[in-house]
Length: 558
Image (cartoon, rainbow, N blue to C red; front, side):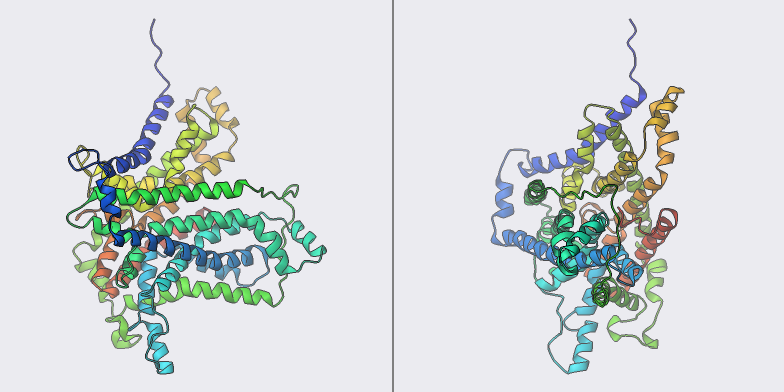
């Protein structure tokens, strides 16, 4: 009897499962394995003793946790009033505030850090120069090279994440609940504290945890500000383990607790929220009216504009000035204006154009792979096509709770050495970017797939179209806007990725983010600013394309 061959779609599902295992599970398994082995392959705990056997290494991890805690708290303080003001009140200037939040989201963290170095450096920073000129004081007004200065800079970079979470939750709160509180005698402020914000508490907590995890894993800002200030963090310590001679075994052992911390935080969030239900019973959604806030709306507007100025406008302006300056410290003057920084990058620098091409190519390839994988996984999960569909969805979302720097070291442990020997190649960077940002694409694809009824696919299959043909000709075209939005946001965040790239690039595969870091280490802030604005131009151009094709807030909705 002739054995029946499996349907091609089944082979695709098997290949998809294998791909996710290679991209997500294999690097983490290798990370754990390398941390428990000597270079000769023998089992040992010596790597953990080396990683945590010195007080300085333990202090670095403690500093990272304290820094992440302060940054998360500050981000929540900045973002929550802004989200409430835009979602629930009649505050004027909402379009301007949206633009500032979007700008803070687009601005790469390390570029914002350089802007704050130019603004608040204790000696030559513009704000401190202005302070000394105005008051004659000798001490600086602000010093970015301090623990609290570093925390504030990172909070200005991170608050859009909490803003997105909280605003999305507040948009679903019906005005009927606030009206009921007002009828019972509660004023606007009391209603906000007792009714509105408690309903958004899961989103506030979720956004705060995301910021905490991102801060712990962030490399660029702690390196640019923390190293000169002698503030050693876990990520800068990991980078030191990769200096010659490379001690990947010790780095892997040092990275494992970061992964455990992420898992514990996510588990703690679920445990806290499981104790209490957060349900708004309002029929078909209820009416949502902006609160008439009187003169208080101008206070809210001042708060929002203040956060926007400090997070994106002032750093952006000082970077723009520096990019056209012969010497950024000389300020605005006709004799200090020059196009030499851009000319140097485009026509004279040995690798600048190559890094621009690398960034575009790696980001586009990673975005395409991530969206393709995400669409197929979300299709399998939503249609329950295989028994292990839930496991595929879990693997697709797992990198969300894996710090980016841990993922990078896992990829180094898994693929840098023979038989793969991919270190320094385009392949390892593209694969790492794909795994790193797969949850973004999957979340968007899964949400879109949930709105698509399977009846059209079933009709196509009845008419003889196979499963893969149905996806290509029916499902994907119907989801093209969501898939395009996911592709654009993965591309944009990949162009600015530093934490993963700096551990995996080689001499011939540097990206713009790595080149920016290298130039900033040399103190050439004028050229750094020019290259940064080239990167921003690419990101803003694609963001503009997304706004035109999908909607003004397509990035913030994802």
